[in-house]
Structure formats: structure tokens, C-alpha cells
Image (tube, rainbow, N blue to C red):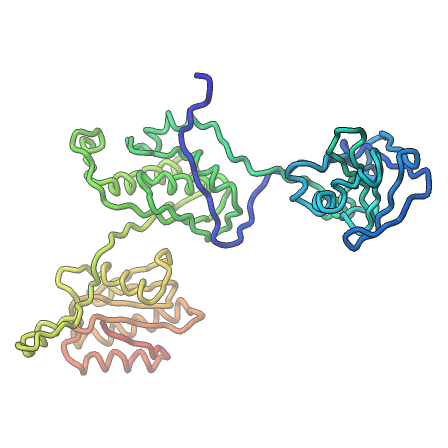
Length: 420
């Protein structure tokens, strides 16, 4: 093969300003090895609002010296340079073509250009007939001299030879997946282009076998970071003649979820002193758990009876709880603690910012026990913000029970009590 086979193309854009991570090396003065010696009195003119001194070929000399912070670097004023910085643009707009009036080999000293200690920029025009290009000489940037910037950044690499990684990633994560599986190293190369801080979220809307989740977990363990991930994947059916189907998987999401589980167990077993939990939460998109009010005008009585229970039959306490968190704008990764009180499950979310009991029934006798337990739990957690408490509306036997629950909680300063 004469040329490297192109495996993948990745288009990257940014919606907000990001701090890109670039490799850097100590700033080198090796190319700052030139010195301009002024030998005669130049002609003074004005170009583009700047003072320009024109030296004839016998009025100056450019000599090579030992590289140092006092030296100048020689740069050709051509190509992208002509658009890329102030020196290039000045040469393009004001010095190109001046050979007709100034002759070949002229030196131009332009004041007010550059960010170095020299206070001016030297330019040379074409030196012989037929030549069109020129040069300019720039000093070491002031930021380097002052010590603010001691390293020079390199451009971000835009080509990675990862043919081997793509060829060997089939069994990464302990699951077999052949439809576009991405190697962990590839995902991490993308993540390494930006500064990721604890709590940042890496989102993958086409998760497949969840290589992104695996890459994030690996990176967290390696760097001691706490980056989070959200993986989204349609539950596409797996072909019945595939190895994955034979292994018991029925959808691509099944493969992804199992990969995260296996990767987490492996990382914990290999790094018992570094990590203790790599759990995740797995959600399926569905309709709301709360019935939509859509009355049947011809039979309003029957409609009212069917809406005595506001929640759809068959939905679990966790289904209702997580919809509640979504609608309240609570982060789905916040800690959730569960306690059994008088035979009923009560949840504390976000260290007491929210309490919820989604049980289907709460008797009059259980009201006081549950309320007092929530009060004690609230005192134990002492949340900084106001606490909200939610119950299933139909769980209360009557309005008296519901009113008593709210009254007991309010006496202890918990006034935001709601029912679903």
C-alpha cells in the first residue's frame, strides 16, 4: 500500500469558548541569531500612519550572531504570513511594489509594530531583479522576556495513525461489537484536546457499545479526575446470527450497559486503593408517569373516577421519583439515600434537598411516624437550601391524613410539602 488507509474522519466544532490543551516546549532562542546594524542616515517617510525609515543597501548591514534573547529572527514575508499578523499585513499593504521607488535591497525600519523590546520592525524588500519576496526581523516576544510565557505551544495534532487500535478494539470492554466500535485510545485523544475539570460532562449521542463511557472511566482512574459522562443510544435490535445475540444481548443498549458494568468492575479490581465506586444510572425514554387530563365530555363522571389516581398504573416508585427529579431540575447523578420507615420507602435526594415517598398507601397510623422520621433525617443532613417533600396524592386515605402530614412537617420548618 502506497498511502495510509483513512479509517475515520472526525469533525470538531465548539459552541462555547474552550481552553484547548496544546503541547508545549521550552522557548528556544536558537533562531534569534540576527542583528541589524544601521550604518547611515535613512530617509524618513510615513506609511499607514507609521514612521518608516528607508535604508539604502550601503546604509545597513545584517549579520549573524550568537543566538540570544537580544537577537532577531528572520521570517519570510510570504504566503499566509501576509494575512496572519500585523507585520505580514504591513508588508502586504505598504511595502509590496516599493522596489520601483526604493530600488532593490532596501531596508525598512517601521515603528509601532511588534510586541518585542526593539520598538520597531525591520523589513527587507526584494534584493535582485525578478525577485518579489521580502523578509522581516522580529525580536523575542515581551511575554517571554518578562517570564509570563516561558514555553512555546505546538499546534494540536489533527492526524493520528490509529489503524492498529481500530483493528484490535473488537473485544475492548469485554463485549463483542462490530458495528463502528471506537477504540478507547481514540476517544481519549479527542478528550485530551480540551481541559476537562471535575464535574464536566462528556456527551455521546451515538453511544454504540459505550466506548466513550469506558474512556472517561479510564481517564478518571488514571488522572484522579471526576469527569462524568452521558451516553445516548437507540435500542436497536441485534441481528440474531451475531455473536452478541448468542451471548444474550438483544439490543445495542444492552451491550453498552453491560460494557460499563464490566469495565467498572475491572477498574475497581485493578485499582482497589484508588476507586470504590464506578456505578452509573440507566434510563429509558418513556411517556410521563402522570396521567394527562383529557376529559371525555359525554361521560365526565367516569373520567373523574379514572383520574382519582393521578399516576399511570404499573409504574414503579423509581419511575415516578426520577420524573420528579427531572421536572424539579435536579441533577440525576446526585446521591439518593433510601430508608424504610413504618414499612414504607422514603428517599432523601441531594443530602436532604428533597424527600419523597412514592408508596401507594400511607395509613393514618403511619403518618406521624413517617413525618417524624423525615424531620429527624432532615436535622441529621442539615441541607443549606430549602427542603421540598413529595408524596403520592392517592396514598393518603383521606384529606385529614394528608393535612396532618403537612402540618407536622411545617411545625419543624419544612413548609414545602406537595403531592403528585
